[in-house]
Image 1 (tube, one colour):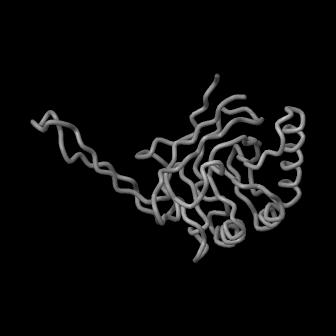
Image 2 (cartoon, helix red, strand yellow):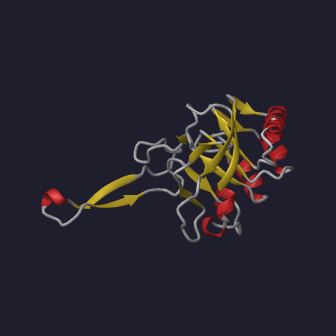
Image 3 (cartoon, one colour):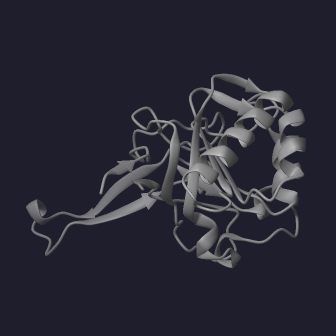
Length: 201
């Protein structure tokens, strides 16, 4: 069984412009005579590799603790793309995903991860909004254009899709994998860090 760790190391991770930088402080140290080492973490829920719940951009959207685990765990298709993903490009990627799932006799795949420096345009998001995709992930710290991510988030989170942002897929070939991106269970939160892993089928 081959595993791909697609998670950024938290303290050295890329941070979305304007978000606080994650910090770790030692409250206790064995070398100072304490009985144990004890770390205190201070961070934004959207630092590093993390997930977005609908509540992130939808006033009454569901929160991290209300999302079933099967949304974060299951078969996912990895596609490679660089640049702004438009409507035609996302349709091609979805077609490739369906063909790969059919060839592997896996049934519908409802999680899509994009390898490369890519973000969704609003036009591509409108295409995705008309599908039954449950999760969309990419390597950027935001799925929409960094300079204007709001509309993409509002549209897709508004229809109940979730996001997996800030993943690292450089060593992962295109194809279908078992994804485990279960977030930390934070009650009422709009997002959460996670340890995202792909398992070769």
